Length: 417
Image 1 (cartoon, rainbow, N blue to C red):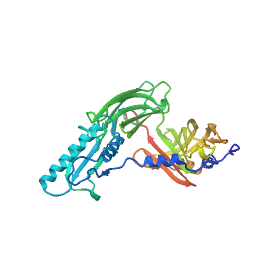
Image 2: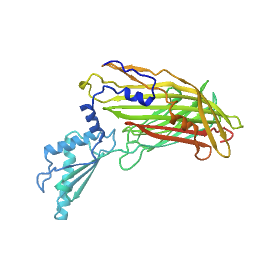
Image 3: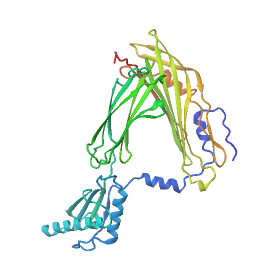
Image 4: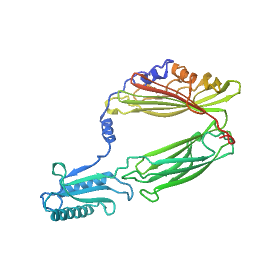
């Protein structure tokens, strides 16, 4: 396969060129899709051979034990809920039968190496389920991310300088009903320093207390970036997480972020491009704005087709710093709250390429600064509340969905929050 020639075209056309020659979905992708379907909400069993029998059938109890193992509740977290049923009849006898069945099932599970004591909520009921099923297992599925609240001193959006300290308090809880697994980790990361950890605390699953509190202090470095960005993260023991980002400008009167993304799938290849551009603007008090734009790109191509079906299997995950930078000029009319900005003197980093094993290459795409929608979003942000401007657009190119959004906020000062 010859190299893919790349003329100077837009990022959207480049996306399509990167996918030439790729085969369709293979068995690996189908298996992944099945896995993404998730663990079943419940499973049913016919454990007992006769209406009045107590001992569970060996083959079926092993199936139940396997289902409980696969639920993989971490640590000493609950394994779920098991309902053992008996047919309706004499109330006293049937209630005793259901209880005896429950005890026999728990003993059998323990005998198969499934430690259920204190972890499996077993109930004895007098009423068979649909189709005569006499056991229902509901695994303990934690399906909700933790709740995360952050506080900072100074407040988010306050201008800081080299040597200043930012104190961040992170409060996380993981107690949604019915099956929380507990907070696993709380972290504070300085994004502008290549993801440096400021603080990281780990906890055991399903341990008290439900609420965890971590306090971390970040010192603004010498020669700080235009925007210090601190990300708080709380994750539970099944990997669900919540994040909160605090931005602290080091210069300017207005700061913000312009974000662009394109996502789509062609021939089993998923491609995602995400650009994040920091904007800093100075206001001269006479209607004029000037500043800078500095942006990075995250490019990811996931080739999910089976490599055995063809030689062109190729994936790539790369971050390109300083993908786009340049000067900004604009105008701002207080009172009327009208703003307009344009990018001048853009500087674009060369687009890296990756050679593919079967020939050709992946191209990480051109800058989007010449796209009409990019220029439009900068040119016409609208007032969106006190000291905030926003604009956004969304459109479709072939199988790709494209989004671009701009948010600008007036900078707070320590004495004028």
